[in-house]
Length: 345
Ligand code: PEP
Ligand code: MN
Image (spheres, helix red, strand yellow):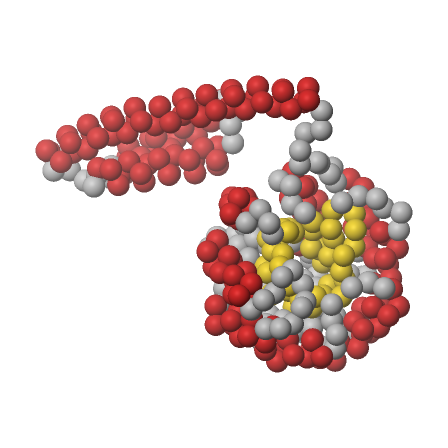
């Protein structure tokens, strides 16, 4: 069963918080594949630039208590400072999450962990803004050392100066590595902060399901266009329900033997092709070493810009004629090229 945490980016008013909660409760009625484990709402909003809506603060706590009383939903809030955490604990909020900007700062995480000593509350840790797996794991470990038992992680993508298709680059390899290192942790994907636009929520959510994530952490607002924060990425509850209908949920282990035999055959072929790739790279690096020697003898620079342009052009058209994604091939050859330069240096 896919675990869902959803609710508005920010609590804006008591009416908005309650109306969104009750609309969300309705979309889960009769749904077998999804479970609404908590209702989210930010009270203190970490905003990149000042002068935008920074949240209602403690004023929103009674609104969330009311959601809990009236819908039976558990509620979850972001905490970034010891003062936020103390207020949230006093109000009996069920769960907390640590935001990307906070995870990036070990002092801030330690402050929270210190307050959490002896407190039994589920904590969700978002990845840091930068793609640093150790920093993410380090935050989890600080909480574990404070005695927190129920820890989950949330993948929300990473910020880069260059803007791509998404607001935050997913860099799926980072959560995949995390799953390998900590298979015991529940992992949710936050497609809202990755996508940045509601039209892209579906494809990001589907990718998370294809990778075997345990659930989704999604921003949903009763009237997204008038939302005070993250208006473009919030989705109205009815559209969220349609998205759930369209998402293909996959089981992580193949159920029948015939299928698992076929998968094994494919994997054996992939393994042998991967071996070929390694062998070709070994051969290529051998030639790189020989050219390196020539460059040294004739005292010319390792980087030959014109030749590099030629390789990029050639591999790009090669990619196109073979039905490969030219951007992927360009990335791949940039890596090969930089590794070749290092060998010659
Ligand atoms: C949020 O979930 O509202 C939020 C601010 O997210 P992040 O920390 O991922 O930017
Ligand atoms: Mn948000």
